[in-house]
Length: 151
Image (cartoon, rainbow, N blue to C red; front, top):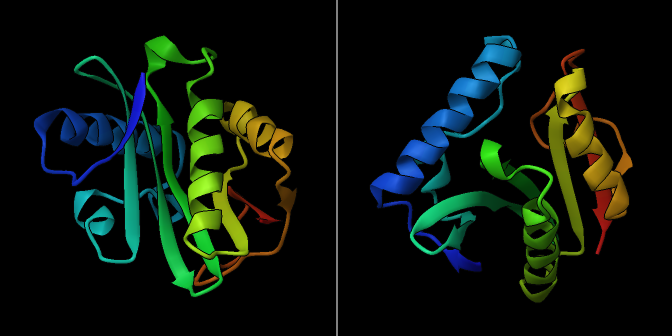
């Protein structure tokens, strides 16, 4: 497996992200869905990585710059068939290291509060994220959980 910066131009990552957005919409009410689509991920303040196993996308994640010291973790996803296989931990370790190299001192995220998101919340806790109040443009939402950590 390899982790690559992805310019989001290929059909494989486009389909992978469409599946992500579809899945989030099936679980979370539309007004509480914060997953970015391709256009939202193609902005200059976002760095996007794909995890590749050969030619197959098996995971992805992104960093969105909020200010010079603070970034948001976005679009963390592992292929359904590959969940619980270490891909998310591998990618999160990579993103944390890259965030530090980019000069960020704080990394925050929003994830769901439903049971479906419990494995994600446990992963973030394992990597030192703690629960926090909404940040950036987020507002309190019963369907959202906010987490942050210092780098």
